Length: 132
Image (cartoon, rainbow, N blue to C red):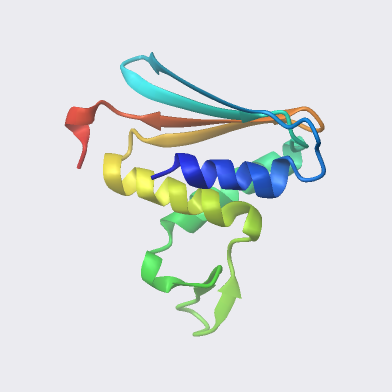
């Protein structure tokens, strides 16, 4: 549901031009929640980009799927299609939306990154008995 698109995201964005790229998968429990970390040693992001990507992921996932058209959102105000998400946030937005639909509000995605060093994405999943 989410590991394959996360790996694709890393290959398309983080490891481009790298000859010694590494993707690390790790899972563990924290505070009764399953945490799945996907980390890379790719290009990373500066703080401004990281905040922008996170905001785009959360905003785009709040828009009903029926309003999305090829990476754009149909605006109810103007009746036109306006850009709402970019190639950097489409995959994350889709994963985030799926997580919220499947697991509810406790599900989350957290991103940490350091430019020219790494990115770590944490997918947080509530216990199985909370599956909606």
